[in-house]
Image (cartoon, rainbow, N blue to C red; front, side):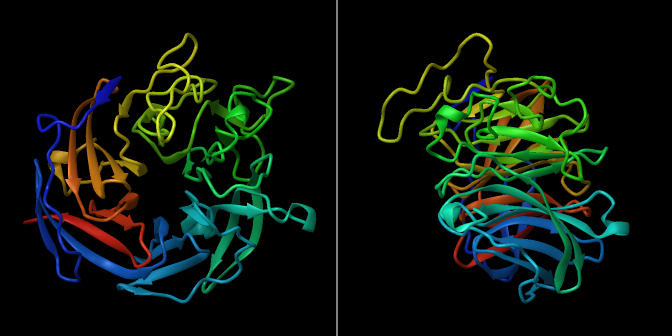
Length: 374
């Protein structure tokens, strides 16, 4: 576990650049980077997927799903369910099924509103499975709906990861005002769940035999996970927002308690102690940040273009407008480099060709593509 404080000995800050259609050049520790704008005009883009035909599939938080073809945005894809848009809620992540080439299945996470008039002002994170069919989606099925639903615009989590066997990890936040529901296993609040691609609790989940626990639960004690990815061994890595300080990275293992709100390296907004920094039976973070970087999006670099980034963990920073590159050795962060992009980074994805794509969280949001200068 490493505590991170701003220090010129630990980080390399690059100068901001003006985002434009022409590539901008940025010097970093390992590579000189070309950064080009692939598309602009998105309303707070949240999730990104690469289609086999070369197009991109991107979500906008205000409820649109679009194709991006040669830098141009399509009209919104139709067929989406009702979405509770507001605050941090809306349409969130998008993931292609591992067999997408043959089944055209996708998964979407989103803020799902209550189903009737009595619960219309409540919402929770849900996962939709659908078939992508041209300018619409069809065969839609809600695979998962976080319980309980509450009236909140905050901390939805919402990242989706698929294992090699087809099971799905879904990250779920504490909803901002429901800390007391994070530790009990009888709710989905502040948890990671693992479900099958038909929506059932995955076989082997750690609390399946526990009478008062939700069978979907994988891990608990989380505040708001907005970054999740698998390593080469198939292990789940996540990062989550701390309160004021204490953003953290974890290798998120079955059945473990990651401590929120009993332990944290952050404090109440405006000051004030929250619990302790350590306690028996609660997992310490692999790495944490004070002050917060507001992380979102995360992926290991396993491409061929950036030889100096091999096996680095790439993390987006909303607060500082950075791409954070973490070198990992023996499951510890051995070095951290900060690459200033100049816009809030919501998602980070590595393209099959080895280039790195970023989403900027803005009213006029962009898709950026990073390649090494030749």
